[in-house]
Image (cartoon, rainbow, N blue to C red; front, side):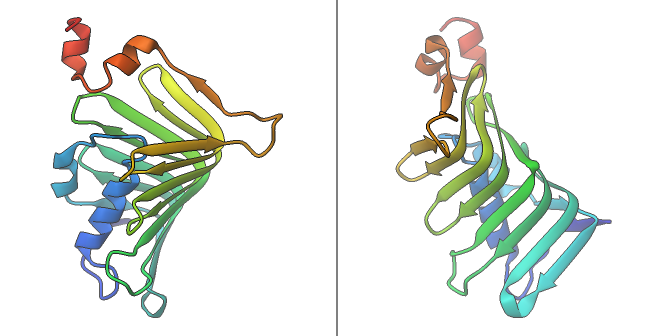
Amino acid sequence: MSYWIKAMPSISMKNANLVLAALLLCGAVTAKESDFAEKVYVDAVKQVAEMQDNRITFEEDVTINQGTIRIKADKVVVTRSGEKGAEVMTAYGKPATFFQILDNGKPVNAHGNTIRYELKNRLVTITGNGQLKQEDSQVNGDLIRYDIVKQKMIAESKSPSQRVKTVFLPDQVENFDKPADQKKQGK
């Protein structure tokens, strides 16, 4: 069964779009702006809207598409605390994944057992086998937090034996803001 998020009494289309779009900013300093103007399509086996609790749950093989944004999860829960702009979206999976093409043409991939986005705080948290990847650079950790406003990322592990692992190519860090076609041309 396929579902397209429509305006609901407790979770409006605009707020759902913002939550979905912002979730994908994890690690993406310059997200593709045109994605945010696109419709959000949700495909799931089951949808449960709990109006009194301001919660909508999508279950079983959930796929969310908005422009270049792709989220896949076993379950996605969107909640609203009653305060406008305070929505929280949580994607669960083994793993839950997302993908987006940035304005510079470079793809960003992330996955974890849980991906949580707090709209009001502009905070993304990936927990359980978390990974954030762009080109050949990646960060792995049990907990990855990204503050979109401060553009600050923190990665942690459960214990010293697990360790946070980071791999990057210096050239890709230097060329992060350059469009993909300029990088290939060596500009």
